[in-house]
Length: 446
Image (tube, rainbow, N blue to C red; front, side, top):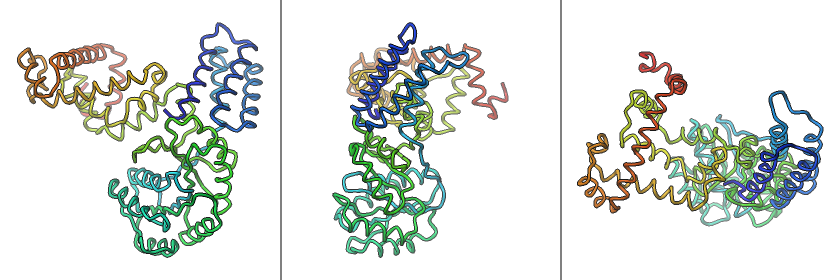
């Protein structure tokens, strides 16, 4: 969960409002103090916290709720809006031909972020190339080359060359005709003069449209001076904030960057190359407050779910057919979307209700069910009703599980099948599904 400690504290403050019989001055002041404490513990700039909570309190006590909205809902809405203001406006990196310069200090995740960004733009239809321009760190070229292979993006570099500008100029010729060229640059342990000069020279040589600063979220208040120094050197157009998964101190970096005026483009939420999210203040705050992020959930699903398969599944639901093979496909898609904890944070209210051990147990159970189904024959997957005692024993032995595990899977399957049947019996929900299928041959025949 992004900024887990801050999110939990803010959700507790929101619950006080939601559970209150009525909203009065005493409650508002109490909630404001809770929010102040939560933000300060997350290392958000003190001046910004006081300014934000003062505005929150004034609005909560003076503004009248819009028609159809209760006073509780209105105050929660104000909290949400004021938090969105803190993190600033985003800066999207569009999928269009461009040159991108990645800058930052050592240990911030710059090279990995270059790969993550390349993957994102590649998936959005761009012909992308990477340039290993870090001429001081011995393993930089090898690291970027390995990343390039994983995402099927070419990498140019020369480990023997110590002139970053020469590498950049050669790369421009090497990748002539590519839509996007991403230049990884050298880092340092601090903002040294020679680092700034080298970055300026490379920036001038490549004439990059986007200059992206990569910052570790745990940098805290020091993010401000760093962002300012790099901005003065090359004119930053965006920031990628890394290691946002779980740190309680990311608020400092968020607020410090917002103060410099350098917009956040992406946040890194994990170690894997797919763990990069386009920064959207509204969605970010929604997840912090436990309101979910259905849009991100849909985007994650779209990455792993085949469109034709999804339509075929919908048609089967419409006809009342649902087999173990269909259930297997659903589990495969679910696991492809990432850890259950990450998915739960995207569903309104669910992240709080599922304890860590519950999520781990559920994740293990889903993995076990897939192993069990791998031990079934095609006939059994298509005809689950025929799986009786002798077949249960054989499947358990073949999958290295117990008969109880197999029966638990069959029980879950039957519950899912009945739920599908109930879903299709609901005319309103059926019509909604029909809308999703409009234009298909099946929907037209209905």
